[in-house]
Amino acid sequence: MREDVPPLTTAVSAAEAAAEIGASRRRVVVDGLGIAVSAAGFGFVYGLAARTDAHFSPLEAMAMSLFAFAGAAQFAAVGYVASGLAWPVIALLTALLNTRHVLYSAALAPWFRGRSFAERAVAAHLLTDEAFALSIAHFRRLGRYDAFGYWYAAIVTTLIPWNVATFAGVTLGDAIVDPSRLGIDVIFPAAMIGLAVGLISGRRELVAAIAGASVGVGVSLTAGPTIGIIAGGVIGPAVGLLVPASRAGERAPLGSEASAQRYSMPHTLREPEDEE
Amino acid sequence: MSTDYVPLALLMFAVTYPSRAIGLLNPAIDRLPRRALEYLQLVGPAVLAALAAVDVMVAVENGRPIFTIGLPWLAVGVCLVLVWWRRNLFVGLLAAVAIAIAGRAAGLP
Image 1 (cartoon, one colour):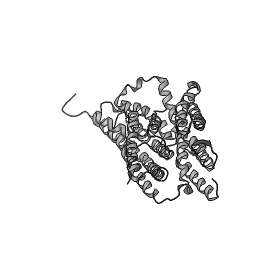
Image 2 (tube, one colour):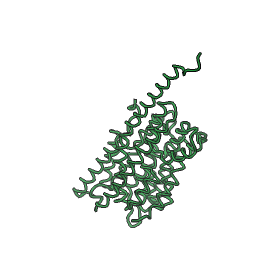
Image 3 (cartoon, rainbow over the protein chains, first blue to last red):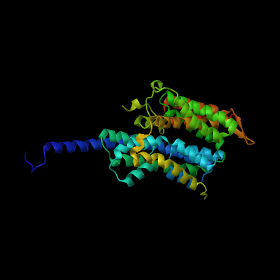
Image 4 (tube, rainbow over the protein chains, first blue to last red):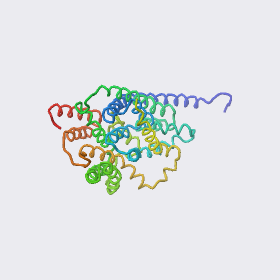
């Protein structure tokens, strides 16, 4: 075989690979549009609730969106602050609420193998349900890591819309005198239960949610809401584990793309099979 | 402009970052016992459901927690059903807010 010209088969493969990566990136962009719109809407509602319920200043609300950058945990923090919970308790509940990211992070780890420590460290801060769902689908289509897929998903579709919308919401919230007349006080519990529904993909999650709510209310009535919420969050999963794995009916185990799509913000809350 | 809660935002970063970074920075997370991973999967729905239920059903009056029934039950209940049915959180939130506005306009607590 001559070695002074590149083999034709490799040239064709390179062209195919370029086409494949282009198509997959376009898919990330298109799928990301819906997520960006929903992240913006949800971020706006968060900003509004942060201002009217917890009386955050724009700076405080923005600090949450930049540093914590965790939709459900931020919503929850608004409720905690409004209820007067102590900061260590807020930290504990926030940590509990975000434990699902352990599994997302572990699922992404093989794709990031070989990337620099700094890149992985920054990527970790921007890891959200949306970034996970978009990027892991992209990596699986390609069969390898592609920086565009992760950073576009994390920054363009989530970080930027979430923060811009937070600012808009918290600024507009100043103009609202009586939040309860506008129904803003129900946004927090409604968002929490809606997000919980998105996480329920089998009998174990359902049992854990019902047990968490029941224990939470029961303990709250005797020991106060702070202890009640922690008790619900700790005991609920233990009760859920009593459902045998063979009867769990799990359709979207956490740490999978399907789970992230079910859990995350509006428009990504859909049945996994809808993706096909 | 108040900055009192900026340290809280940093604290929340401090407690959320490890869960995001542990797998990416230390792939040995795969070695956690299976039962522990299964438990972690169930924490989210349990905490979120507890937060919603306590917010709607428990009020604190004169320092004492009491069971309460009111308009938020209906608003949050409708949100739950709609999200379950339509798989769209926004639809649920909009319905909950609409019910709360209508109910308050009608004088419900």
